[in-house]
Amino acid sequence: MLMCRDLARIASDYIDGELGTMDRVSVKMHLLMCGHCRTFIGNLRASIDLMKAHSSQQVDEELVHRIDSRIKERLDAQRSRKNDSE
Amino acid sequence: METAKHQSDEDILINGLKSGDQAAFHEAVRLYTPGMLAVARFYLDPSSAEETVQDCWVTVIDAIQKFEGRSGLKTWLHRIVANRAKNHLRKTKREVSSDFSETLDPELADRFAHNGRWATPPGLKSNESAQALMENGALSDCLDQHLAALPETQRSALMLYEAHQHKSDDVCNILDVSASNLRVLLHRARQRIFLMVETFQETGEC
Image 1: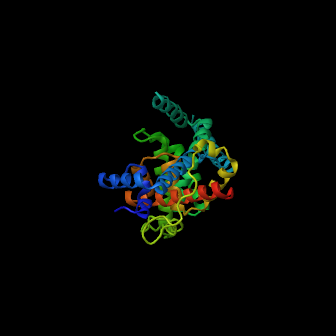
Image 2: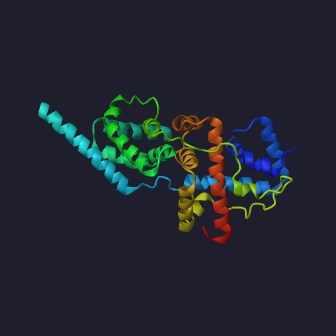
Image 3: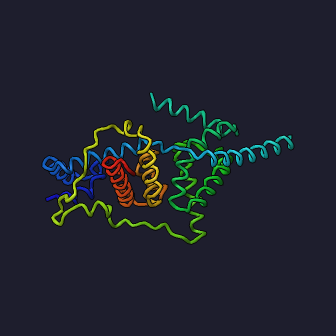
């Protein structure tokens, strides 16, 4: 029988739909009987949503600036070579 | 409809990059650098990772001419970074170390009794939506701190899969991990975030 600890091990696979049919049914049966595990799955889902909502795209402006400068340098060099050859 | 619009935005950006338009590069750098860093950090220490991402952008100026759009721009850039980072890693003869043997976080594992049932069950049920929670600046800062404290391999897997929404196959490809090891990395990282949110909601502290 699936215990709470076993469910915690495969919780992400359950949430992502990566479990086989048997395991999936076992998890669903367990969840029907176990409030703690329902809370666990619910809160784990909420954590995943939080990660998605979190502005992971926060940009390091200094790094962007350094990269921009290097790109500009390279593009300028390419342009001046092109102008020289014309 | 959304996809079509998205594609055409990306096409405009790609055309700008191909024609050497500096504004297009600036936009692409802002958009794609965080994900590229997540890839590089999987393999390298922070300063080598930054350097690798910078070098990549310089090579993209020429390489973009050969970009045929078979994959999306994001996946293409992430693969370039992964290849460069792997080469760098080979030169330094370091290895990416990660433990794929245990799927349960030790802190969570301690909360089960010998019989496999919860000894310390999960706390309050979280009813607030992710968006509502994120409006709490303290929680957002706390999440940043915990993300920074994750092992690099777990963080990169989480960022690429969750934040940058790559498919599993792409993440495995970019990070050179098997599908089953990716599952372990993701689950371990998610448990850390789960524990952080729980502590934050119970104590109001990070």
